[in-house]
Image (cartoon, rainbow, N blue to C red; front, top):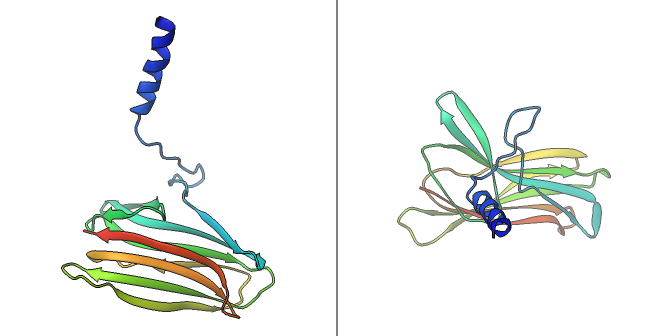
Length: 167
Protein backbone atom coordinates (compact mmCIF):
# COMPACT_ATOMS: atom_id res chain seq x y z
CA UNK A 1 0.00 0.00 0.00
CA UNK A 2 2.83 2.42 0.86
CA UNK A 3 4.47 1.76 -2.52
CA UNK A 4 1.30 2.87 -4.32
CA UNK A 5 0.57 5.85 -2.08
CA UNK A 6 3.98 7.53 -2.53
CA UNK A 7 3.70 8.00 -6.35
CA UNK A 8 0.21 9.47 -5.94
CA UNK A 9 1.45 11.97 -3.35
CA UNK A 10 4.33 13.00 -5.63
CA UNK A 11 2.01 13.42 -8.62
CA UNK A 12 -0.41 15.45 -6.50
CA UNK A 13 2.33 17.79 -5.30
CA UNK A 14 3.71 18.23 -8.82
CA UNK A 15 0.22 19.05 -10.12
CA UNK A 16 -0.15 21.78 -7.52
CA UNK A 17 3.15 23.47 -8.41
CA UNK A 18 3.15 27.00 -9.78
CA UNK A 19 3.92 27.86 -13.40
CA UNK A 20 7.60 27.52 -14.24
CA UNK A 21 9.28 30.50 -15.91
CA UNK A 22 12.59 29.85 -17.65
CA UNK A 23 15.10 32.70 -17.57
CA UNK A 24 18.00 33.31 -19.98
CA UNK A 25 21.31 33.13 -18.13
CA UNK A 26 22.91 35.92 -20.19
CA UNK A 27 20.21 38.56 -19.64
CA UNK A 28 18.26 37.37 -16.61
CA UNK A 29 15.03 38.00 -18.55
CA UNK A 30 12.31 35.43 -19.25
CA UNK A 31 13.21 33.17 -22.17
CA UNK A 32 11.20 33.54 -25.35
CA UNK A 33 8.54 30.94 -25.82
CA UNK A 34 5.71 30.62 -28.32
CA UNK A 35 8.04 31.44 -31.24
CA UNK A 36 6.80 30.41 -34.68
CA UNK A 37 9.10 29.57 -37.59
CA UNK A 38 7.42 29.82 -41.01
CA UNK A 39 8.49 29.72 -44.62
CA UNK A 40 6.73 29.19 -47.92
CA UNK A 41 7.12 25.88 -49.78
CA UNK A 42 7.73 27.84 -53.00
CA UNK A 43 10.34 30.07 -51.31
CA UNK A 44 11.99 27.74 -48.83
CA UNK A 45 15.09 29.93 -48.61
CA UNK A 46 13.13 32.81 -47.01
CA UNK A 47 12.48 32.09 -43.34
CA UNK A 48 10.52 34.03 -40.73
CA UNK A 49 10.54 33.91 -36.94
CA UNK A 50 7.57 35.40 -35.07
CA UNK A 51 6.63 36.04 -31.45
CA UNK A 52 4.35 38.32 -29.44
CA UNK A 53 5.75 40.25 -26.49
CA UNK A 54 3.92 42.30 -23.89
CA UNK A 55 5.95 44.76 -21.81
CA UNK A 56 4.67 44.58 -18.24
CA UNK A 57 5.40 47.29 -15.68
CA UNK A 58 6.49 45.72 -12.39
CA UNK A 59 7.32 49.01 -10.68
CA UNK A 60 7.78 52.62 -11.72
CA UNK A 61 11.40 51.86 -12.66
CA UNK A 62 11.17 48.33 -14.05
CA UNK A 63 9.45 46.43 -16.83
CA UNK A 64 9.76 42.82 -17.97
CA UNK A 65 8.79 41.07 -21.21
CA UNK A 66 5.95 38.54 -21.19
CA UNK A 67 5.76 36.29 -24.25
CA UNK A 68 2.21 35.45 -25.35
CA UNK A 69 0.69 32.54 -27.25
CA UNK A 70 -0.71 33.51 -30.66
CA UNK A 71 -3.45 30.90 -30.36
CA UNK A 72 -4.96 32.13 -27.09
CA UNK A 73 -7.27 35.07 -26.46
CA UNK A 74 -6.02 37.39 -23.72
CA UNK A 75 -7.64 39.89 -21.37
CA UNK A 76 -4.85 42.31 -20.53
CA UNK A 77 -5.02 44.98 -17.82
CA UNK A 78 -4.42 48.50 -19.12
CA UNK A 79 -2.74 49.70 -15.93
CA UNK A 80 0.40 47.55 -16.19
CA UNK A 81 0.63 46.98 -19.98
CA UNK A 82 3.23 49.41 -21.34
CA UNK A 83 3.58 47.92 -24.84
CA UNK A 84 2.37 45.03 -26.98
CA UNK A 85 4.31 44.05 -30.10
CA UNK A 86 4.30 41.44 -32.84
CA UNK A 87 7.97 40.79 -33.60
CA UNK A 88 8.90 39.34 -36.99
CA UNK A 89 12.41 38.53 -38.17
CA UNK A 90 12.83 37.80 -41.88
CA UNK A 91 15.91 35.94 -43.10
CA UNK A 92 16.20 36.39 -46.87
CA UNK A 93 19.60 35.07 -48.09
CA UNK A 94 18.83 35.57 -51.82
CA UNK A 95 17.66 39.16 -51.20
CA UNK A 96 14.29 38.71 -52.89
CA UNK A 97 11.93 41.67 -52.66
CA UNK A 98 9.11 41.34 -50.10
CA UNK A 99 6.73 43.45 -48.04
CA UNK A 100 5.42 43.24 -44.49
CA UNK A 101 1.77 44.04 -43.83
CA UNK A 102 -0.02 44.56 -40.50
CA UNK A 103 -3.82 44.35 -40.13
CA UNK A 104 -5.54 45.72 -37.02
CA UNK A 105 -9.23 45.17 -36.39
CA UNK A 106 -10.43 47.27 -33.47
CA UNK A 107 -13.74 47.34 -31.65
CA UNK A 108 -13.85 50.20 -29.15
CA UNK A 109 -15.68 49.80 -25.86
CA UNK A 110 -19.48 49.95 -26.17
CA UNK A 111 -19.46 49.40 -29.96
CA UNK A 112 -20.50 46.35 -32.02
CA UNK A 113 -18.49 46.58 -35.24
CA UNK A 114 -14.78 46.09 -35.79
CA UNK A 115 -12.93 48.77 -37.76
CA UNK A 116 -10.16 47.39 -39.98
CA UNK A 117 -6.86 49.17 -40.69
CA UNK A 118 -4.24 47.69 -43.05
CA UNK A 119 -0.73 49.13 -42.98
CA UNK A 120 2.21 48.28 -45.21
CA UNK A 121 5.17 48.38 -42.81
CA UNK A 122 8.05 47.65 -45.18
CA UNK A 123 8.98 47.02 -48.79
CA UNK A 124 12.50 45.93 -49.61
CA UNK A 125 14.97 43.09 -50.01
CA UNK A 126 17.14 43.11 -46.89
CA UNK A 127 18.90 39.86 -46.09
CA UNK A 128 18.15 39.85 -42.34
CA UNK A 129 15.66 42.30 -40.89
CA UNK A 130 13.53 42.46 -37.74
CA UNK A 131 10.22 44.27 -37.39
CA UNK A 132 8.45 45.29 -34.21
CA UNK A 133 4.80 45.80 -35.13
CA UNK A 134 3.16 47.95 -32.45
CA UNK A 135 -0.29 46.87 -31.27
CA UNK A 136 -2.80 49.27 -29.69
CA UNK A 137 -3.05 49.23 -25.89
CA UNK A 138 -6.04 51.51 -25.35
CA UNK A 139 -9.22 49.96 -23.94
CA UNK A 140 -11.14 47.84 -26.45
CA UNK A 141 -11.19 44.52 -28.34
CA UNK A 142 -8.54 43.80 -30.95
CA UNK A 143 -7.59 41.30 -33.63
CA UNK A 144 -4.11 41.84 -35.05
CA UNK A 145 -2.47 39.83 -37.83
CA UNK A 146 0.60 40.13 -40.03
CA UNK A 147 1.86 38.80 -43.34
CA UNK A 148 5.11 38.68 -45.27
CA UNK A 149 4.28 38.85 -48.99
CA UNK A 150 6.64 38.25 -51.95
CA UNK A 151 6.96 40.75 -54.78
CA UNK A 152 4.69 38.62 -57.00
CA UNK A 153 1.90 38.79 -54.39
CA UNK A 154 2.22 35.23 -53.07
CA UNK A 155 2.48 34.91 -49.28
CA UNK A 156 5.76 33.85 -47.73
CA UNK A 157 4.31 33.77 -44.19
CA UNK A 158 0.86 34.65 -42.92
CA UNK A 159 0.28 34.82 -39.19
CA UNK A 160 -3.29 34.32 -37.96
CA UNK A 161 -5.18 36.82 -35.84
CA UNK A 162 -3.94 37.50 -32.35
CA UNK A 163 -7.03 38.30 -30.28
CA UNK A 164 -6.93 40.35 -27.11
CA UNK A 165 -8.94 42.72 -24.94
CA UNK A 166 -7.49 45.67 -23.06
CA UNK A 167 -9.62 46.25 -20.00
